[in-house]
Image (cartoon, rainbow, N blue to C red):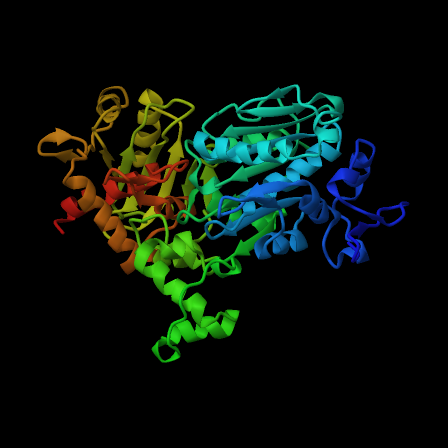
Length: 512
């Protein structure tokens, strides 16, 4: 933009851009040059300039004002690619910016479908209010002409003249994106999606057209889970990573602290990131107000914000260290469901611990862990959607292979049936018994004790654990809101529970 406010587009003369000048004929032209950076705009894109002229937002003070990019939004635009993942502190404006960018693409590129996916229905409705405000404040010529809507409700806005639409849905809708072909997909607060976020995200990716733009963004919510996994493998999948710490928001400051009161950590932070005493004052307030959640809600780096969040049951540093050194399996079977690291050795005794499930194609897996009895070394692992006789046959065969190992089956729920089949149909005789009854009983007392054995082992003897899949489940095993512990939303804990059962049974058998 020049001093007079002009934009130069391909083949066009420099002109003054103001909201009243953007008519039906201009929109497609801007749609073709949204991502260009004319010299007259001093590093900004045409889309950023167009947002300032066309789009109004509600400010933190409750006023309606033009959308002007803040520091985080400008940084995003500088590095934005076709597929992006954004890790951020709270209230950085990225949801609004993604909505604005995709709204401009929707109204300037005929035939566009934009899909916004929020973590809750309430969040979806809030995003849609932002988009409705964009529509309501468009120039009358556009709003009553080429951008006249034929449908505008809590789920979608349709622009029939340009065959375009903007939809906002909740991630709780398992059919989100099904049957659609989207040119723009924005997934908001992915770390907090309910159900199976990875499955929902896979469905959305399947709905994306070739060349579609994708933005995944969230504040952190612990290691493991869909968002953390997407962040970790971004280099492999071609996603552009963006990290925005809290100090990029200029409003985040408080009364300046005394320089003499600075801690070594605070001095280092100031030197590394150019913070001032007012920002340090705000940081101290954050730690007083949010305590342990401060590093999660107001992220300072892209590693500790994950490790500080999510209330993990196990020691994350130990898990991360072991993940870096865990070996590959020497053999896999059943399409990778069964992995073997240490084949059976003559003279060794083993146990096979089993956490049974119903066997359906959805829900929990049945899992089994093979442990060397003397050392507790993990030798093999199975997890798959099997149950009943198929599971009984599989684990008895595995136990027989490992020198007729002790078979330790959780007898809660589905386990009683598996035990009966293992003994009667499969004829396996070396069944672990507890109090005279076959199988392991998980109770409110035995469960924490067994998990405690696993937690201690991860810290004291991490080399006993071979499976990266087990370690990934341990990483996502958290304290839940109701006081219990279990897998974070979208993850499983079947391998964890099978290992805990195995370690608990081993302790009883060895008299430890």
